[in-house]
Image (cartoon, rainbow, N blue to C red; front, side):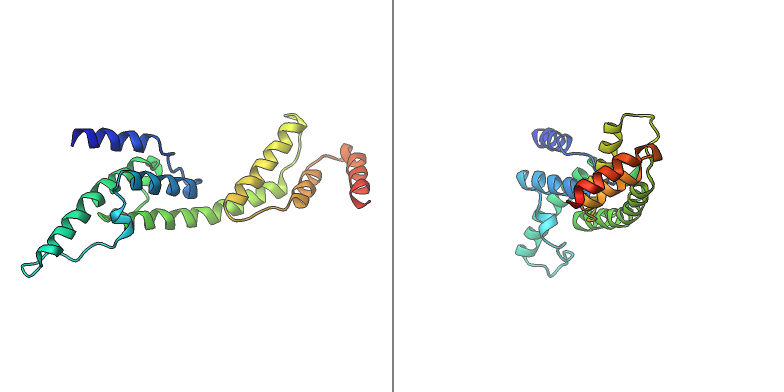
Length: 183
């Protein structure tokens, strides 16, 4: 039992923490680690029906086999979610339900984040407070984040957003670029 708790903690420590922006990567890592630990039964199978006086030995055994991984998997999930997000997720004692709640939370947060990032990309202006290289990298990073949210920004649009973010003194550069591009 003690060795399992150390292994569970060690595995959870190696999973990236879900921070609201990295659901796909976090979910993939969680499922992998729970599979390696052979604790993924509660994710793969629905909760068995409650045990009654008329339950067969087979049903009782399956219930017991499902309950243990469910409890540990739930702990594992909670250990790998940022505290500020944990408090917004409805509490349940079912791993599969909990993961679905996290995914729903992510999807709603995802939509608002995508809108914010798109607005940021479209209105961003170069003000000289950082190098041109840093400005372009920042805009490229925003486009990459949008892509992970399912909103890919075509490279030609990204270049246009970058050109539009430049102040008037870069006008000759913009004209030169557009001339070269059209050839």
